[in-house]
Length: 163
Image (tube, rainbow, N blue to C red; front, side, top):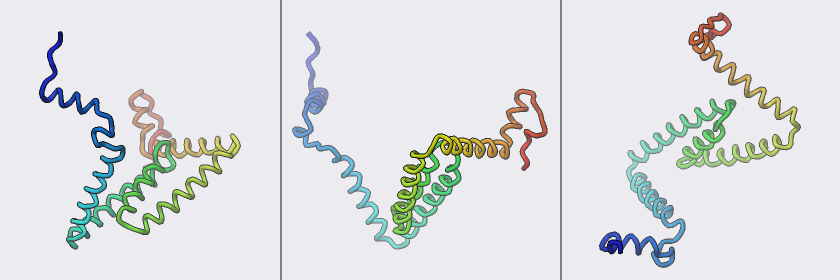
């Protein structure tokens, strides 16, 4: 015979076995609570003119930095466009122009990706070739090939960065 479940463990057991209807929990409830809490906090910030200005400037700076990083990352493999959309999303949380721009850019991106997906293997291969050239050129300009060459004892002048 095992130990009887008492006190806190019994409450955990009972709560854990209760269905969503029995416990009063409904899907999305936690998200709604977070959103409501955020809205209340944002209203308090907006009530103070100086604090609101500082908040908007902060959102503008952070959103612009994320957007700039995304634009730089677009030609490279990875989440360049995702970072662009994140930056615009940050800006759109405070600025109507960014909200409109986010929707405009997203529509153009979706249209381009739809077009690109219907292209021939030659066009898709050219896209891969362009991406490869951009990545290799960037690594060369940043001196990565020279650094790796020195690690393995290969010191060629053409590996050196032009910078």
